[in-house]
Length: 207
Image (cartoon, rainbow, N blue to C red; front, side, top):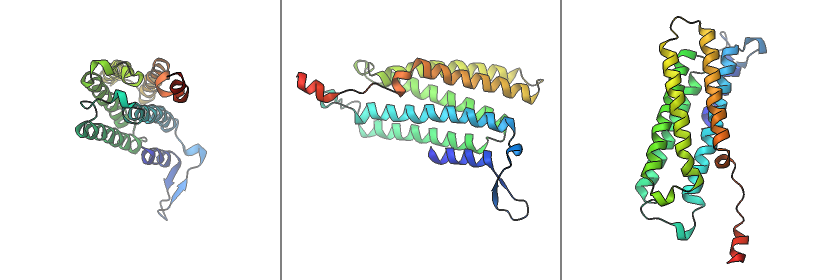
């Protein structure tokens, strides 16, 4: 994930000298508004996925209490599935960072990221035992999925009807939709990204 962020930053700020072939920092005036907006979209999505994946793994494996251990939920195959899913997320982000200067392709890959993530979240939520779905991070999988799938539909519909629109207009609409998707995500699941600190020492004293 960090490597994809660096790659996106390189594509935004660096250019290759046509004579020497050496990468050099672009003049500020060389940075296109479209490239900057797509980088902002990438950054918002990056923060969501990075923090979301960390919180999911923490709640599922690291913060687990011994009495809450469930052999059916913590098998090697479940860990392999989680690893594979997160690896696929990373691959999607690689393609996003690689196409940050190519809006039409970036648009399609971004939509694909949200779609794949929605499917993964729905599967994650419904394959977990019902009694374990009260964990905040797991419960919010449903919220994340619904938010993403709604915007996937909006992006697909707009893509189908935007053939006669200018590239600039399409970019602004895309930026607005992508930004709104992230804002709704943070507003609805803030407690997942930034949970309150649970003082376990106090609980032990109470027991």
